[in-house]
Image 1 (cartoon, rainbow, N blue to C red):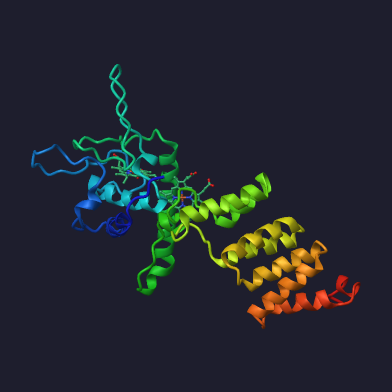
Image 2: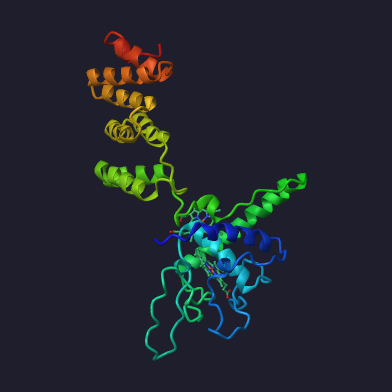
Length: 297
Ligand code: HEC
Ligand code: HEC
């Protein structure tokens, strides 16, 4: 999916704030006006998108330019282009099919609108409208509950949940689902693909604890092989993660591989001598056989 330059997000946020409180603001820059076609070439007439005709959630006072500027924020928040939600104009009957809209969406060279922004033909636009309503309700609630104190309320926007992807699913959920439905190999390659694509972006959390938690959850639900897979995968990127080494040690202990379990827990303690889970694990591994079966008593 094509990503929009980040600058649109900032400009758009500025304009959104302005338009949602119905304050007239001067347009911050030509860049934020993208979208609806820029009037005729060479006419010198005041350009800009036409007045919106099908606003059901946004304020009907908003001009085409204000809507287009806000839409930049929406698109950047989801990491998509305008044509993710908007369809190309339907050609008149008998006319040859219109050329496909450019991926950057909606900005025609000749100034003619490339997308039919008023049309509700795409399910994604309908979904987005429900989201717009939700966001507006959330912000009304926030302003109502917290706005009395006089300090400005932090506004929720698409990016608050979406972080630059259309489907705001947590990395750990995507990975556990893949593990469950497609198995270990797919889950591992899914992680590597996503890491290659998104590492350093705001979209997914690739920090150390994510796979450690998956390993611990797998242990807790007796999925020892999954735990081994998550722990080993995490150690590829975080070889000094003591909690991951402890989880790996526990998985190996469950498998009956005491030698590996001991080595890993000792490695964990060398990295983090105060690690309580590692100390417990070492005690259990060193306890005489039989005692380890009832550690809680
Ligand atoms: C995630 C979906 C989504 C994306 C991406 C998106 N829009 Fe929209 N757009 C909407 C929705 C929903 C509405 C209707 C809002 C309403 O009903 O209040 C809308 C309405 C509009 C309108 C007003 C149309 C009319 O006549 O009522 C314009 C103009 C517009 N969008 C331009 C753009 C531009 C330009 C882009 C790319 C920068 C863009 N949109 C990207 C969902 C989207
Ligand atoms: C409170 C969190 C939250 C906010 C804020 C939010 N969304 Fe969403 N959005 C979600 C979730 C969760 C889903 C996935 C729902 C599902 O699984 O069907 C979703 C799904 C979507 C989808 C469908 C994507 C797909 O591939 O199925 C669109 C389009 C969308 N959101 C648009 C928006 C827009 C536009 C905004 C801002 C006006 C917005 N969302 C704000 C949580 C949010």
